[in-house]
Length: 176
Image (cartoon, rainbow, N blue to C red; front, side, top):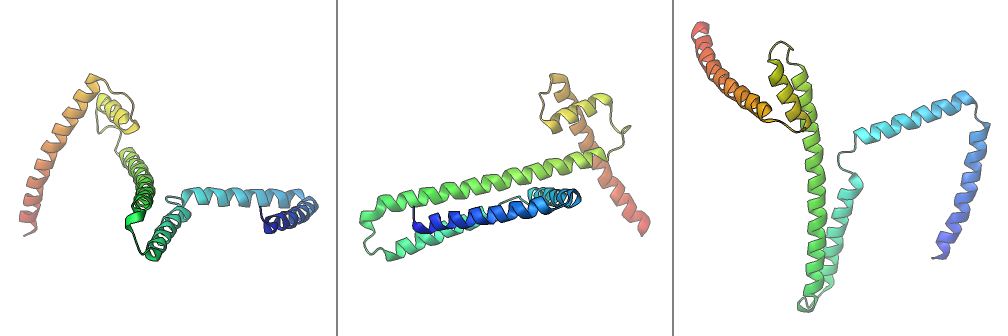
């Protein structure tokens, strides 16, 4: 440890003592307001946290560091092992970041599909088709009958989409 770290611990303790004194002097209403404000801030941070900015900056920082290290080298043949490990590490970090982004987008897509499914009127589908769709949306185990009703719904949708094309042609004719 360096001396700077030791000195900073003393200042941190002093600041902590000051914060405790100020906190003890607050009234109960002010304390509750501060707690609510902190909870709101934490909730907003979780909502706005698809990809942490620190991680993406960390990847960029590692790439810049690798570039600087590579530029300082004059004879690269002796550093092939080091270069290979740098590239593997950067590749794994990049892949990890991409997978986090994919999972976030998949979660948002599933949430949007659930919300859109909730807009469908209750009388629009049969009860067994609704059960099969709910199992598919929630990712629970489906039975053979659920798969049958999903196939049946798929065929029904394809037929209706063909009919929609015909109705669009008729709509164009009427608008003439």
